[in-house]
Image 1 (cartoon, one colour):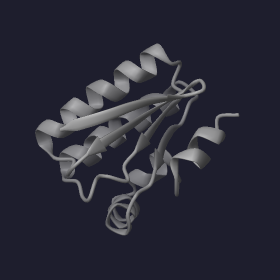
Image 2 (tube, rainbow, N blue to C red; image 1 turned 135 degrees about the vertical axis):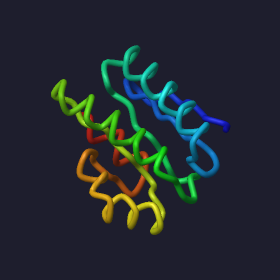
Image 3 (spheres, helix red, strand yellow; image 1 turned 90 degrees about the vertical axis):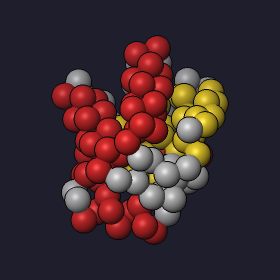
Image 4 (cartoon, helix red, strand yellow; image 1 turned 60 degrees about the horizontal axis):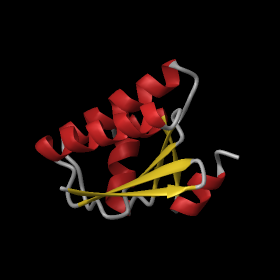
Length: 111
């Protein structure tokens, strides 16, 4: 899986491309955790290029969301398509993160 990384001011934006499935979820998890460690949790996961996910992707979002909540921070997702929003809502995984329509709004929410 390709994961684009972009720095916007003090926020790291990670954009995975493709379905978020088992092996890919591990790769995204590692990239997000590295970004969190090096950027004090100011990370946005832009999922606008992720058409769908399986349970491994949901588990990754749950794990990172829980870890950040336990340290007083919030996991921020941006650009979820309708399918992803439905899955996040139905599984209640979306409750562990803040969701934004676009990256710009998510980045600005750190101010």
